[in-house]
Length: 282
Image (tube, rainbow, N blue to C red; front, side):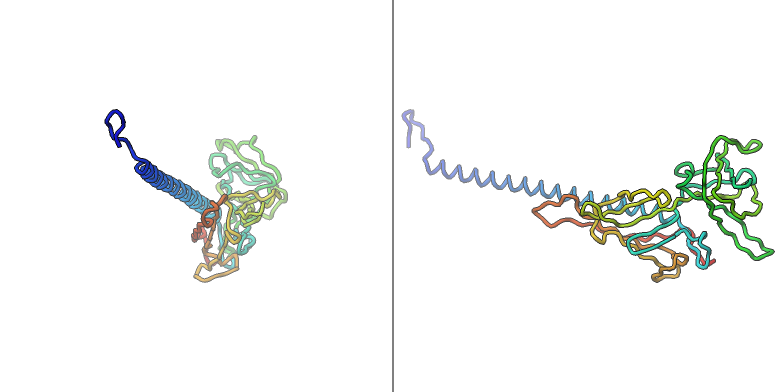
């Protein structure tokens, strides 16, 4: 059809076809953008889950990898205090120092220059393990004697040119032999790692046993069985004897905090095996 100016215009059919083609192309572009957005959200959620389980595995490895387990050893030689499939109570290493003068009655003084750890000792929270060497004459073996800390002071110096000291006042006076300068003292904190439920979700949490504090979340949310512990003998095979544990297999399963209703909820699982620092036969 020609208009009065002599130019041919569009017919109704042509306009309808153009509109249909435009709608088809627009719909395809919209679906592409929507699918891309969903894929991006899914990938972001997957990355967040992977980061969560890796962070959890790193925390657990840092805590449990410092533990001692000696088959046939005394309670003070073994750092695992209680164990279960979804929880473990242990002595967490918080620092180490060295005696700078012979201990007095109920007092141990460490050289500040020799002390290293996450923080200074805290009375009521931390405990000390004092190294007592064995005696070949009596066939006694090296051991760590546990002592409770009643107070901590940093105002007293080590004798001579020893410099600043950290003085530990003990709750009880243990039966300790005469200890030489340089005797190591480990500062430990009884801790619990366990799976727990809060707000209808599951979390991996930690708490300090001595303070009686409420458990604090470390990683989550997790699946209902999202934190599993398997204790392995230092010679291989499972064991529930704290002194015979050579490694701990840890499995963490994380779930999405806010799943997308258009797809199944994502889960991420990571299993790692942690070898204890000193597992041996006493």
